[in-house]
Length: 259
Length: 304
Image (cartoon, rainbow over all chains, first blue to last red; front, top):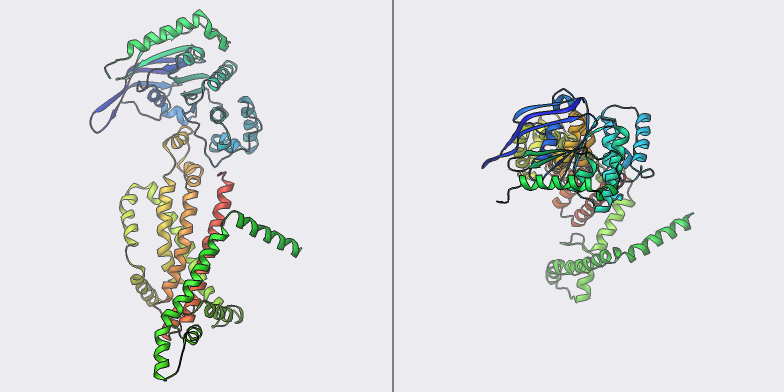
Protein backbone atom coordinates (compact mmCIF):
# COMPACT_ATOMS: atom_id res chain seq x y z
CA UNK A 1 0.00 0.00 0.00
CA UNK A 2 1.10 3.48 -0.84
CA UNK A 3 1.38 5.83 2.13
CA UNK A 4 -0.54 9.12 2.04
CA UNK A 5 0.75 10.39 5.36
CA UNK A 6 4.02 9.38 6.98
CA UNK A 7 4.91 10.72 10.41
CA UNK A 8 8.15 9.85 12.23
CA UNK A 9 9.11 10.76 15.79
CA UNK A 10 7.06 13.94 15.61
CA UNK A 11 6.95 16.29 18.60
CA UNK A 12 5.26 19.61 19.20
CA UNK A 13 5.81 21.80 22.22
CA UNK A 14 3.84 24.99 22.81
CA UNK A 15 5.84 27.66 24.59
CA UNK A 16 3.55 29.28 27.12
CA UNK A 17 4.49 31.93 29.64
CA UNK A 18 4.87 29.73 32.71
CA UNK A 19 5.90 26.33 31.31
CA UNK A 20 6.17 24.51 27.98
CA UNK A 21 3.20 22.31 27.03
CA UNK A 22 4.16 19.01 25.41
CA UNK A 23 1.23 18.63 22.99
CA UNK A 24 2.78 15.79 20.98
CA UNK A 25 5.73 13.58 21.79
CA UNK A 26 7.44 10.97 19.60
CA UNK A 27 4.44 10.28 17.35
CA UNK A 28 4.91 7.64 14.59
CA UNK A 29 2.03 7.10 12.22
CA UNK A 30 1.45 5.90 8.69
CA UNK A 31 -1.81 6.36 6.80
CA UNK A 32 -2.26 4.36 3.60
CA UNK A 33 -4.37 5.31 0.60
CA UNK A 34 -8.02 4.50 1.16
CA UNK A 35 -7.60 4.15 4.93
CA UNK A 36 -10.15 5.48 7.37
CA UNK A 37 -8.03 6.30 10.41
CA UNK A 38 -9.55 7.52 13.65
CA UNK A 39 -7.54 9.34 16.28
CA UNK A 40 -9.20 8.73 19.63
CA UNK A 41 -8.29 9.91 23.09
CA UNK A 42 -9.37 12.10 25.99
CA UNK A 43 -9.31 15.86 25.59
CA UNK A 44 -5.82 17.27 25.76
CA UNK A 45 -4.19 14.22 24.17
CA UNK A 46 -3.12 16.19 21.10
CA UNK A 47 -5.38 14.50 18.56
CA UNK A 48 -6.63 17.80 17.16
CA UNK A 49 -3.08 19.18 17.23
CA UNK A 50 -1.87 16.17 15.23
CA UNK A 51 -4.58 16.75 12.65
CA UNK A 52 -3.66 20.44 12.47
CA UNK A 53 0.00 19.51 11.93
CA UNK A 54 -1.02 17.34 8.98
CA UNK A 55 -3.04 20.30 7.64
CA UNK A 56 -0.10 22.71 8.13
CA UNK A 57 -2.14 24.76 10.61
CA UNK A 58 0.48 24.03 13.32
CA UNK A 59 4.22 23.59 12.97
CA UNK A 60 5.93 20.61 14.65
CA UNK A 61 8.97 21.38 16.79
CA UNK A 62 10.72 18.11 15.92
CA UNK A 63 10.42 15.01 13.75
CA UNK A 64 9.44 14.17 10.17
CA UNK A 65 6.12 14.46 8.37
CA UNK A 66 5.24 13.95 4.72
CA UNK A 67 1.81 14.27 3.11
CA UNK A 68 1.64 12.70 -0.35
CA UNK A 69 5.42 12.64 -0.25
CA UNK A 70 5.82 16.39 0.27
CA UNK A 71 5.81 18.75 3.25
CA UNK A 72 2.43 19.65 4.80
CA UNK A 73 2.86 23.21 3.51
CA UNK A 74 3.40 22.00 -0.03
CA UNK A 75 0.40 19.66 0.35
CA UNK A 76 -1.75 22.54 1.57
CA UNK A 77 -0.66 24.74 -1.32
CA UNK A 78 -1.54 21.88 -3.70
CA UNK A 79 -4.97 21.68 -1.98
CA UNK A 80 -4.57 17.98 -1.36
CA UNK A 81 -6.86 17.84 1.68
CA UNK A 82 -10.31 19.05 2.70
CA UNK A 83 -10.69 19.98 6.36
CA UNK A 84 -13.90 19.68 8.39
CA UNK A 85 -13.83 21.51 11.72
CA UNK A 86 -15.65 20.76 14.96
CA UNK A 87 -18.02 23.64 14.17
CA UNK A 88 -19.55 24.00 10.69
CA UNK A 89 -17.75 27.36 10.16
CA UNK A 90 -20.22 28.53 7.54
CA UNK A 91 -20.02 32.22 6.68
CA UNK A 92 -23.36 33.67 7.85
CA UNK A 93 -23.60 36.19 4.99
CA UNK A 94 -23.39 33.47 2.32
CA UNK A 95 -26.22 31.18 1.30
CA UNK A 96 -25.77 27.42 1.57
CA UNK A 97 -24.83 27.22 -2.11
CA UNK A 98 -22.34 30.09 -1.93
CA UNK A 99 -20.78 28.62 1.22
CA UNK A 100 -20.36 25.35 -0.59
CA UNK A 101 -18.80 26.92 -3.67
CA UNK A 102 -16.48 29.28 -1.77
CA UNK A 103 -13.39 27.04 -2.06
CA UNK A 104 -14.17 26.69 -5.77
CA UNK A 105 -14.29 30.48 -6.12
CA UNK A 106 -10.91 30.70 -4.40
CA UNK A 107 -9.52 28.08 -6.74
CA UNK A 108 -10.81 29.96 -9.77
CA UNK A 109 -13.28 27.37 -11.03
CA UNK A 110 -15.86 28.63 -13.54
CA UNK A 111 -19.35 29.63 -12.48
CA UNK A 112 -21.05 26.88 -14.49
CA UNK A 113 -18.79 24.23 -12.98
CA UNK A 114 -19.37 25.67 -9.49
CA UNK A 115 -23.13 25.39 -9.90
CA UNK A 116 -22.84 21.84 -11.16
CA UNK A 117 -20.64 20.83 -8.19
CA UNK A 118 -23.00 22.54 -5.73
CA UNK A 119 -25.92 20.59 -7.16
CA UNK A 120 -23.99 17.33 -7.02
CA UNK A 121 -22.60 17.64 -3.51
CA UNK A 122 -25.78 19.03 -1.96
CA UNK A 123 -27.54 15.99 -3.35
CA UNK A 124 -24.82 13.78 -1.89
CA UNK A 125 -25.48 15.11 1.63
CA UNK A 126 -29.28 15.15 1.11
CA UNK A 127 -29.66 18.92 1.09
CA UNK A 128 -31.15 19.49 -2.36
CA UNK A 129 -33.57 22.42 -2.15
CA UNK A 130 -31.63 24.30 0.52
CA UNK A 131 -29.36 26.19 -1.92
CA UNK A 132 -30.77 29.62 -1.17
CA UNK A 133 -31.16 29.24 2.58
CA UNK A 134 -28.84 31.05 4.95
CA UNK A 135 -26.93 28.99 7.55
CA UNK A 136 -29.08 30.12 10.50
CA UNK A 137 -32.13 28.65 8.78
CA UNK A 138 -30.58 25.15 9.02
CA UNK A 139 -30.28 22.79 11.98
CA UNK A 140 -26.86 21.98 13.43
CA UNK A 141 -26.73 18.62 11.65
CA UNK A 142 -27.63 20.18 8.31
CA UNK A 143 -25.00 22.87 8.76
CA UNK A 144 -22.37 20.24 9.43
CA UNK A 145 -23.47 18.38 6.29
CA UNK A 146 -22.99 21.57 4.30
CA UNK A 147 -19.48 21.87 5.71
CA UNK A 148 -18.73 18.28 4.68
CA UNK A 149 -20.09 18.93 1.19
CA UNK A 150 -17.91 22.04 1.06
CA UNK A 151 -14.82 19.99 1.94
CA UNK A 152 -15.72 17.47 -0.78
CA UNK A 153 -16.60 20.11 -3.39
CA UNK A 154 -13.05 20.58 -4.67
CA UNK A 155 -12.52 16.83 -4.69
CA UNK A 156 -9.48 16.40 -2.45
CA UNK A 157 -8.03 12.91 -2.05
CA UNK A 158 -7.64 13.34 1.67
CA UNK A 159 -10.31 14.33 4.20
CA UNK A 160 -9.25 15.63 7.61
CA UNK A 161 -12.16 15.69 10.05
CA UNK A 162 -11.93 17.11 13.55
CA UNK A 163 -14.83 15.77 15.66
CA UNK A 164 -17.28 16.87 12.99
CA UNK A 165 -20.25 15.32 14.78
CA UNK A 166 -19.19 16.15 18.33
CA UNK A 167 -21.85 18.79 18.89
CA UNK A 168 -24.74 16.76 17.47
CA UNK A 169 -27.29 14.55 19.20
CA UNK A 170 -26.85 10.78 19.16
CA UNK A 171 -29.50 10.04 16.55
CA UNK A 172 -28.21 12.63 14.06
CA UNK A 173 -24.69 11.47 14.73
CA UNK A 174 -25.55 7.81 13.98
CA UNK A 175 -27.24 8.87 10.78
CA UNK A 176 -24.34 11.03 9.62
CA UNK A 177 -21.85 8.30 10.57
CA UNK A 178 -23.62 5.91 8.26
CA UNK A 179 -23.72 8.48 5.45
CA UNK A 180 -20.03 9.21 5.90
CA UNK A 181 -19.21 5.53 5.75
CA UNK A 182 -21.18 5.12 2.48
CA UNK A 183 -19.37 8.13 1.10
CA UNK A 184 -15.98 6.70 2.02
CA UNK A 185 -16.89 3.36 0.50
CA UNK A 186 -18.03 4.98 -2.73
CA UNK A 187 -15.26 7.54 -3.23
CA UNK A 188 -12.30 5.63 -1.82
CA UNK A 189 -10.93 8.75 -0.20
CA UNK A 190 -8.41 8.62 2.62
CA UNK A 191 -9.92 9.93 5.87
CA UNK A 192 -8.28 10.97 9.13
CA UNK A 193 -10.99 11.41 11.73
CA UNK A 194 -10.65 12.80 15.25
CA UNK A 195 -13.16 11.70 17.87
CA UNK A 196 -13.53 10.93 21.55
CA UNK A 197 -16.37 8.47 21.05
CA UNK A 198 -15.39 4.81 21.11
CA UNK A 199 -18.44 3.49 19.18
CA UNK A 200 -17.96 6.16 16.52
CA UNK A 201 -14.27 5.31 16.09
CA UNK A 202 -14.88 1.57 15.90
CA UNK A 203 -17.89 1.90 13.62
CA UNK A 204 -16.16 4.14 11.07
CA UNK A 205 -12.53 3.16 11.00
CA UNK A 206 -10.31 0.74 9.21
CA UNK A 207 -7.62 1.68 11.75
CA UNK A 208 -7.98 3.16 15.21
CA UNK A 209 -5.15 5.14 16.78
CA UNK A 210 -5.48 5.43 20.57
CA UNK A 211 -3.77 8.45 22.09
CA UNK A 212 -3.06 9.56 25.64
CA UNK A 213 -2.37 12.98 27.14
CA UNK A 214 0.56 14.78 28.83
CA UNK A 215 2.51 14.40 26.68
CA UNK A 216 0.29 13.57 23.70
CA UNK A 217 1.42 10.21 22.32
CA UNK A 218 0.12 7.09 20.58
CA UNK A 219 -0.48 4.14 22.92
CA UNK A 220 -2.12 1.65 20.55
CA UNK A 221 -2.93 1.18 16.87
CA UNK A 222 -5.76 -1.26 16.10
CA UNK A 223 -6.45 -2.64 12.62
CA UNK A 224 -10.14 -3.30 12.37
CA UNK A 225 -11.17 -6.48 10.60
CA UNK A 226 -14.76 -5.30 10.16
CA UNK A 227 -16.10 -5.36 6.57
CA UNK A 228 -16.30 -2.04 4.72
CA UNK A 229 -20.02 -2.29 3.96
CA UNK A 230 -21.00 -2.33 7.62
CA UNK A 231 -24.28 -0.95 8.93
CA UNK A 232 -25.22 0.36 12.37
CA UNK A 233 -26.31 -3.19 13.36
CA UNK A 234 -22.69 -4.23 13.43
CA UNK A 235 -22.41 -2.52 16.79
CA UNK A 236 -24.18 -5.49 18.39
CA UNK A 237 -21.71 -8.09 17.09
CA UNK A 238 -18.98 -9.69 19.23
CA UNK A 239 -16.26 -8.53 16.78
CA UNK A 240 -17.30 -4.92 17.20
CA UNK A 241 -17.47 -5.21 20.99
CA UNK A 242 -14.06 -6.85 21.08
CA UNK A 243 -12.44 -3.95 19.22
CA UNK A 244 -14.31 -1.45 21.39
CA UNK A 245 -12.99 -3.21 24.49
CA UNK A 246 -9.43 -3.03 23.21
CA UNK A 247 -9.84 0.70 22.53
CA UNK A 248 -11.25 1.21 26.02
CA UNK A 249 -8.31 -0.67 27.58
CA UNK A 250 -5.87 1.43 25.59
CA UNK A 251 -7.53 4.62 26.74
CA UNK A 252 -7.52 3.45 30.36
CA UNK A 253 -3.88 2.40 30.25
CA UNK A 254 -2.84 5.74 28.79
CA UNK A 255 -4.88 7.80 31.15
CA UNK A 256 -3.28 9.03 34.33
CA UNK A 257 -5.72 9.60 37.15
CA UNK A 258 -3.49 11.90 39.14
CA UNK A 259 -5.06 15.02 37.62
CA UNK B 1 -54.41 56.09 -7.02
CA UNK B 2 -54.15 58.93 -4.50
CA UNK B 3 -56.86 57.39 -2.33
CA UNK B 4 -54.93 54.15 -2.41
CA UNK B 5 -51.80 55.94 -1.27
CA UNK B 6 -53.78 57.70 1.44
CA UNK B 7 -55.25 54.41 2.56
CA UNK B 8 -51.80 52.88 2.70
CA UNK B 9 -50.56 55.85 4.74
CA UNK B 10 -53.51 55.61 7.09
CA UNK B 11 -52.85 51.89 7.41
CA UNK B 12 -49.21 52.54 8.20
CA UNK B 13 -50.27 55.12 10.77
CA UNK B 14 -52.61 52.69 12.48
CA UNK B 15 -49.90 50.03 12.35
CA UNK B 16 -47.50 52.52 13.98
CA UNK B 17 -50.08 53.18 16.70
CA UNK B 18 -50.52 49.48 17.31
CA UNK B 19 -46.80 48.83 17.57
CA UNK B 20 -46.74 51.66 20.11
CA UNK B 21 -44.02 53.71 18.46
CA UNK B 22 -45.99 56.81 17.49
CA UNK B 23 -47.80 57.33 20.79
CA UNK B 24 -44.67 57.62 22.98
CA UNK B 25 -42.95 59.86 20.43
CA UNK B 26 -45.95 62.18 20.10
CA UNK B 27 -46.41 62.25 23.87
CA UNK B 28 -42.83 63.39 24.40
CA UNK B 29 -43.22 65.97 21.62
CA UNK B 30 -46.39 67.34 23.24
CA UNK B 31 -44.65 67.53 26.62
CA UNK B 32 -41.73 69.42 25.07
CA UNK B 33 -44.09 71.92 23.41
CA UNK B 34 -45.97 72.55 26.69
CA UNK B 35 -42.75 73.06 28.65
CA UNK B 36 -41.42 75.27 25.85
CA UNK B 37 -44.45 77.58 25.91
CA UNK B 38 -44.12 77.86 29.70
CA UNK B 39 -40.39 78.54 29.50
CA UNK B 40 -40.93 81.18 26.80
CA UNK B 41 -43.17 83.21 29.14
CA UNK B 42 -40.85 82.70 32.12
CA UNK B 43 -37.69 83.71 30.24
CA UNK B 44 -39.17 86.62 28.30
CA UNK B 45 -41.18 88.09 31.19
CA UNK B 46 -38.40 90.07 32.98
CA UNK B 47 -37.62 92.14 29.92
CA UNK B 48 -41.28 92.75 29.14
CA UNK B 49 -42.07 93.78 32.72
CA UNK B 50 -39.06 96.12 32.64
CA UNK B 51 -40.52 97.73 29.54
CA UNK B 52 -44.02 98.09 31.00
CA UNK B 53 -42.62 99.75 34.10
CA UNK B 54 -40.38 102.12 32.13
CA UNK B 55 -43.35 103.25 30.08
CA UNK B 56 -45.67 103.28 33.15
CA UNK B 57 -47.93 100.95 31.29
CA UNK B 58 -50.66 98.92 32.94
CA UNK B 59 -50.37 95.16 32.34
CA UNK B 60 -51.88 91.87 33.40
CA UNK B 61 -50.97 88.23 32.96
CA UNK B 62 -52.93 87.85 29.72
CA UNK B 63 -51.13 90.81 28.15
CA UNK B 64 -47.77 89.49 29.40
CA UNK B 65 -48.31 86.06 27.87
CA UNK B 66 -49.48 87.33 24.50
CA UNK B 67 -46.54 89.80 24.38
CA UNK B 68 -44.10 87.05 25.41
CA UNK B 69 -45.19 85.03 22.37
CA UNK B 70 -44.81 87.89 19.87
CA UNK B 71 -41.51 89.62 20.66
CA UNK B 72 -39.23 90.40 17.73
CA UNK B 73 -36.09 89.38 19.63
CA UNK B 74 -37.22 87.07 22.42
CA UNK B 75 -34.80 85.32 24.77
CA UNK B 76 -36.67 82.14 23.89
CA UNK B 77 -39.05 82.29 20.94
CA UNK B 78 -42.34 80.39 21.13
CA UNK B 79 -42.58 77.30 18.88
CA UNK B 80 -45.17 78.90 16.59
CA UNK B 81 -42.85 81.88 15.96
CA UNK B 82 -40.20 79.42 14.73
CA UNK B 83 -42.80 77.66 12.60
CA UNK B 84 -43.78 81.00 11.02
CA UNK B 85 -40.11 81.85 10.40
CA UNK B 86 -39.50 78.39 8.90
CA UNK B 87 -42.57 78.77 6.71
CA UNK B 88 -41.25 82.12 5.48
CA UNK B 89 -37.61 81.08 4.92
CA UNK B 90 -38.16 77.54 3.71
CA UNK B 91 -41.41 77.56 1.74
CA UNK B 92 -42.05 81.17 0.72
CA UNK B 93 -38.53 82.11 -0.36
CA UNK B 94 -37.04 80.85 -3.64
CA UNK B 95 -34.23 78.37 -2.89
CA UNK B 96 -31.71 80.46 -4.84
CA UNK B 97 -32.17 83.41 -2.47
CA UNK B 98 -29.75 84.12 0.35
CA UNK B 99 -32.74 84.48 2.63
CA UNK B 100 -33.80 80.90 1.96
CA UNK B 101 -32.88 78.41 4.64
CA UNK B 102 -32.99 75.67 2.01
CA UNK B 103 -30.16 77.47 0.18
CA UNK B 104 -28.07 77.62 3.36
CA UNK B 105 -28.89 74.02 4.25
CA UNK B 106 -27.77 72.99 0.77
CA UNK B 107 -24.42 74.74 1.20
CA UNK B 108 -23.83 72.99 4.53
CA UNK B 109 -25.08 69.66 3.24
CA UNK B 110 -22.75 69.63 0.23
CA UNK B 111 -19.61 70.16 2.34
CA UNK B 112 -20.75 67.72 5.01
CA UNK B 113 -21.47 65.01 2.42
CA UNK B 114 -18.09 65.55 0.78
CA UNK B 115 -16.48 65.34 4.23
CA UNK B 116 -18.49 62.23 5.03
CA UNK B 117 -17.31 60.44 1.89
CA UNK B 118 -13.68 61.50 2.33
CA UNK B 119 -13.71 60.70 6.06
CA UNK B 120 -15.26 57.28 5.57
CA UNK B 121 -12.74 56.38 2.87
CA UNK B 122 -9.88 57.63 5.03
CA UNK B 123 -11.20 55.64 7.99
CA UNK B 124 -11.47 52.46 5.92
CA UNK B 125 -8.00 52.88 4.42
CA UNK B 126 -6.47 53.48 7.85
CA UNK B 127 -8.24 50.43 9.29
CA UNK B 128 -7.08 48.18 6.44
CA UNK B 129 -3.51 49.42 6.96
CA UNK B 130 -3.70 48.94 10.71
CA UNK B 131 -4.89 45.33 10.58
CA UNK B 132 -2.39 44.27 7.92
CA UNK B 133 0.74 46.14 8.99
CA UNK B 134 1.82 45.61 12.55
CA UNK B 135 3.93 48.77 12.79
CA UNK B 136 0.96 50.88 11.71
CA UNK B 137 -1.10 49.35 14.51
CA UNK B 138 1.54 50.42 17.02
CA UNK B 139 2.31 53.82 15.54
CA UNK B 140 -0.98 55.06 14.13
CA UNK B 141 -3.65 53.99 16.59
CA UNK B 142 -2.52 56.25 19.48
CA UNK B 143 -2.45 59.24 17.12
CA UNK B 144 -5.90 58.46 15.80
CA UNK B 145 -7.25 58.47 19.34
CA UNK B 146 -5.27 61.60 20.23
CA UNK B 147 -6.63 63.44 17.19
CA UNK B 148 -10.10 63.31 18.69
CA UNK B 149 -9.07 64.67 22.08
CA UNK B 150 -8.31 68.04 20.46
CA UNK B 151 -11.48 70.15 20.70
CA UNK B 152 -12.81 70.60 17.19
CA UNK B 153 -13.79 74.20 17.98
CA UNK B 154 -10.13 74.97 18.70
CA UNK B 155 -8.65 73.28 15.68
CA UNK B 156 -11.28 74.25 13.09
CA UNK B 157 -10.20 77.92 12.78
CA UNK B 158 -6.57 76.80 12.43
CA UNK B 159 -7.46 74.46 9.59
CA UNK B 160 -9.47 77.19 7.87
CA UNK B 161 -6.64 79.74 8.23
CA UNK B 162 -3.91 77.37 7.07
CA UNK B 163 -5.91 76.21 4.05
CA UNK B 164 -6.91 79.77 3.15
CA UNK B 165 -3.20 80.73 3.10
CA UNK B 166 -2.60 78.14 0.39
CA UNK B 167 -5.62 79.37 -1.50
CA UNK B 168 -8.19 76.76 -0.45
CA UNK B 169 -11.47 78.41 0.54
CA UNK B 170 -15.15 77.58 0.45
CA UNK B 171 -16.33 73.99 0.26
CA UNK B 172 -13.04 72.13 0.70
CA UNK B 173 -11.88 73.47 4.10
CA UNK B 174 -15.29 72.80 5.63
CA UNK B 175 -15.32 69.31 4.14
CA UNK B 176 -11.89 68.69 5.64
CA UNK B 177 -13.18 69.53 9.10
CA UNK B 178 -16.01 67.06 8.52
CA UNK B 179 -13.45 64.52 7.36
CA UNK B 180 -11.46 65.09 10.54
CA UNK B 181 -14.50 64.18 12.65
CA UNK B 182 -15.81 61.40 10.38
CA UNK B 183 -12.79 59.22 9.91
CA UNK B 184 -12.50 58.37 13.60
CA UNK B 185 -15.62 56.26 14.21
CA UNK B 186 -15.12 54.58 10.84
CA UNK B 187 -11.46 53.74 11.51
CA UNK B 188 -12.17 52.39 15.00
CA UNK B 189 -15.27 50.45 13.88
CA UNK B 190 -13.52 48.97 10.86
CA UNK B 191 -10.44 47.88 12.82
CA UNK B 192 -12.80 45.99 15.11
CA UNK B 193 -14.86 44.68 12.19
CA UNK B 194 -11.93 43.53 10.07
CA UNK B 195 -10.60 41.69 13.12
CA UNK B 196 -13.97 40.13 13.93
CA UNK B 197 -13.54 36.81 12.01
CA UNK B 198 -12.84 34.06 14.53
CA UNK B 199 -9.73 31.83 14.32
CA UNK B 200 -11.63 28.94 12.73
CA UNK B 201 -12.98 31.16 9.94
CA UNK B 202 -9.40 32.26 9.25
CA UNK B 203 -8.10 28.66 9.48
CA UNK B 204 -10.68 27.64 6.89
CA UNK B 205 -9.23 30.17 4.44
CA UNK B 206 -5.76 28.84 5.28
CA UNK B 207 -6.81 25.27 4.40
CA UNK B 208 -7.80 26.52 0.92
CA UNK B 209 -4.44 28.31 0.57
CA UNK B 210 -6.41 31.49 -0.05
CA UNK B 211 -4.34 34.57 -0.85
CA UNK B 212 -4.35 37.57 1.48
CA UNK B 213 -6.55 39.45 -0.97
CA UNK B 214 -9.04 36.56 -1.16
CA UNK B 215 -9.17 36.33 2.64
CA UNK B 216 -9.79 40.06 2.76
CA UNK B 217 -12.59 40.22 0.20
CA UNK B 218 -14.29 36.93 1.05
CA UNK B 219 -13.97 37.00 4.83
CA UNK B 220 -12.71 40.18 6.49
CA UNK B 221 -14.65 42.67 4.39
CA UNK B 222 -18.11 41.03 4.63
CA UNK B 223 -17.52 40.27 8.32
CA UNK B 224 -16.83 43.95 8.95
CA UNK B 225 -19.86 45.27 7.04
CA UNK B 226 -22.19 45.49 10.07
CA UNK B 227 -19.46 47.40 11.94
CA UNK B 228 -18.94 49.74 8.98
CA UNK B 229 -22.63 50.56 8.67
CA UNK B 230 -22.98 51.27 12.39
CA UNK B 231 -19.93 53.56 12.22
CA UNK B 232 -21.30 55.36 9.17
CA UNK B 233 -24.42 56.29 11.12
CA UNK B 234 -22.28 58.03 13.73
CA UNK B 235 -20.02 59.55 11.06
CA UNK B 236 -22.82 61.09 9.01
CA UNK B 237 -24.16 62.98 12.03
CA UNK B 238 -20.63 64.13 12.88
CA UNK B 239 -20.03 65.30 9.32
CA UNK B 240 -22.86 67.81 9.68
CA UNK B 241 -21.43 69.08 12.99
CA UNK B 242 -18.06 69.45 11.28
CA UNK B 243 -19.48 71.44 8.37
CA UNK B 244 -21.40 73.80 10.67
CA UNK B 245 -18.39 74.30 12.95
CA UNK B 246 -16.33 74.98 9.81
CA UNK B 247 -18.72 77.79 8.88
CA UNK B 248 -18.54 79.54 12.25
CA UNK B 249 -15.01 80.99 12.46
CA UNK B 250 -14.61 82.14 8.88
CA UNK B 251 -17.31 84.69 8.53
CA UNK B 252 -18.69 82.42 5.86
CA UNK B 253 -21.54 84.08 4.04
CA UNK B 254 -23.54 80.97 3.41
CA UNK B 255 -24.47 77.84 5.29
CA UNK B 256 -26.31 76.90 8.47
CA UNK B 257 -23.28 77.94 10.52
CA UNK B 258 -23.26 81.38 8.89
CA UNK B 259 -26.96 81.76 9.70
CA UNK B 260 -26.31 80.85 13.32
CA UNK B 261 -23.46 83.33 13.56
CA UNK B 262 -25.37 86.16 11.85
CA UNK B 263 -28.34 85.46 14.09
CA UNK B 264 -26.27 85.75 17.22
CA UNK B 265 -24.60 89.01 16.04
CA UNK B 266 -27.95 90.69 15.64
CA UNK B 267 -29.80 88.93 18.46
CA UNK B 268 -32.10 87.25 15.94
CA UNK B 269 -33.03 84.34 18.19
CA UNK B 270 -35.89 83.24 15.95
CA UNK B 271 -33.48 82.94 13.06
CA UNK B 272 -31.02 80.94 15.21
CA UNK B 273 -33.71 78.54 16.33
CA UNK B 274 -34.98 78.05 12.79
CA UNK B 275 -31.46 77.23 11.63
CA UNK B 276 -31.07 74.83 14.55
CA UNK B 277 -34.32 73.06 13.70
CA UNK B 278 -33.31 72.73 10.04
CA UNK B 279 -29.88 71.42 11.06
CA UNK B 280 -31.34 68.79 13.36
CA UNK B 281 -33.96 67.74 10.80
CA UNK B 282 -31.18 67.39 8.27
CA UNK B 283 -29.08 65.29 10.68
CA UNK B 284 -32.13 63.17 11.43
CA UNK B 285 -32.74 62.54 7.73
CA UNK B 286 -29.10 61.65 7.08
CA UNK B 287 -28.97 59.18 9.97
CA UNK B 288 -32.28 57.71 8.84
CA UNK B 289 -30.99 57.30 5.29
CA UNK B 290 -27.83 55.51 6.43
CA UNK B 291 -30.00 53.40 8.74
CA UNK B 292 -32.26 52.44 5.83
CA UNK B 293 -29.22 51.52 3.73
CA UNK B 294 -27.95 49.47 6.66
CA UNK B 295 -31.18 47.50 6.97
CA UNK B 296 -31.21 46.88 3.22
CA UNK B 297 -27.61 45.67 3.05
CA UNK B 298 -27.86 43.49 6.16
CA UNK B 299 -31.04 41.88 4.91
CA UNK B 300 -29.28 40.98 1.69
CA UNK B 301 -26.47 39.50 3.75
CA UNK B 302 -28.97 37.14 5.33
CA UNK B 303 -29.25 38.64 8.78
CA UNK B 304 -32.33 37.58 10.68
